[in-house]
Image (cartoon, rainbow, N blue to C red):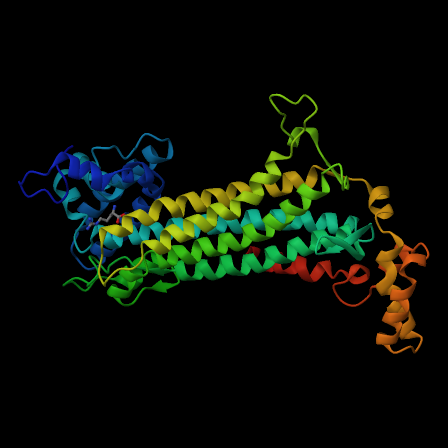
Amino acid sequence: MSAKLWDKGGVSDTEMMRYTARDDWQLDQRLLPFDLRATRAHVRGLARIGLVNADELARLEAGLDELDARCAVGEFRVTPADEDCHSAIETALVATLGEAGKKVHTGRSRNDQVLVALRLYEKHALATLAEATTTGALALLELAASEAMTPMPGYTHLQRAVPSSIGLWAAGIAESLADALDAIHAASAQCDRCPLGTAAGYGVNIALDRDGVAAELGFASICVNPVAAQASRGSVEVAVLTAAWQAMTAIRRFAWDLSLFTTAEFAFVKLDEALTTGSSIMPNKRNPDVVELMRAACGVLQGAIAELMGMLSLPSGYQRDLQLTKAPLFRGLDEALATTRMLPRVVAGMTFDRERMRRALTPDCFATDRAVELALAGVPFRDAYRQVAKEIASLAEGDADRSLAARTSPGACGDLRLGDIRARFTASAS
Ligand code: ARG
């Protein structure tokens, strides 16, 4: 391994170095563009307080331009010889700029450097997830609009219960995604405070322009207290993954229902052949693996959150344990994004057997409607309920269309209020 930023002439045990650096160099590759952005803002801040002169700033910015360009085409890579992306950047700047490069770390530590890079990355990842969530939800709402009155049974305890519609089902997933979107925005707000300038976690003996640096990086404000800034590492990540987990719970429910609906037993939905996989032994099989993996995403998020939480029993100040929060964060966000991006494809790939769904609305499914109708005619509901219970076996065929149309309370089949749900996605798209 090459000389470390912290090299003071001693000898480091090679195995210890490998053990502590582990796969950080690989994980840090995705933080590199964000660390470069934060580094630029940091040196510009140093220039404003006179710690870097105009010539040095120009050279540092040119050096960072070059690293940005090389990073964008995959040529600037963190290598195992670098401990992390922070070292890679400083090493590269010193190699090309000499003395000016050596000034870049004035007033900062890798501890606040990794915090700011992570927050910039998280804001970006959450914005991408919000966009994908919106796309998926809008696809569900479109389906809900065109199938608002297509009858299907509503289930409780997985037993047929009352008349429902494809529209009610699809809009139900979309509205759960709207709740998840709120959580995504809330997590993003937690990431929106800039930790840069808190240095190792106790501030530094310079009057850094922290507010200016935060504004330049697009943060809403700074993390005020340096100890709190350090302590936020890990718990901010829990908030980020919990928001993603919430989106996955909505998708899991969609996937669960769909895996039932595509069985021969239900046969409500056929999935496009292009969205199915085969079996190596059973020539007859077309399997909805994609739906099952979408269901499993929630478990991946849950595992990542548990892994993060397990890391967080720490005293004040930076501890190297925190390095291990990166892998579950990236794993969880990758899983959530990949899964969410499948949603509109699967929605578009569903073909409904409308007749079969209508036939599944057996006379018993209209028992509640019947009891309510009697109540409307003046029979006290409990008496109506008992009367209908006695007639269950002889109930006549129900009229699904009439039943759906009569469900006019807000949110029900006859008044899905899709516009209200849609507005929660379009309002937050800005
Ligand atoms: N790779 C480290 C991390 O993710 C960067 C900070 C290192 N700081 C230190 N004092 N060793 O936490």
